[in-house]
Length: 118
Image (cartoon, rainbow, N blue to C red):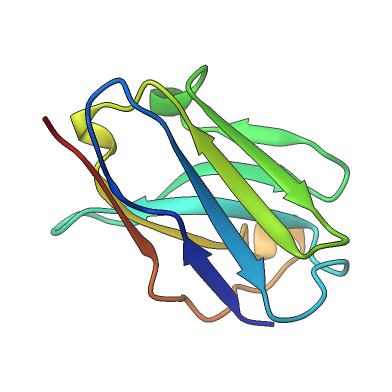
């Protein structure tokens, strides 16, 4: 399975974006999927995750502003981002949540750039 991210853009502070992650194959067997972000010189961080059963997790910095959803039938994972801040600027990636939740990591895609600036 390969994951392809899209939806990144330049947006003003306070604005919204909707990121999409499309899988090349079925995600039915994947327990947990999530969105990560990375800025130059920093480690990639988990922003939001969702399990097959619908359990959610969010980084403290995005709680109340970001919403992750999953459509297993369509093979997509979406991140709705509201009230964006300049510090949300990063390249966003989707992937599994790894071995701790029973999955292996997939190959990282190219990501999608989100820039929040006036």
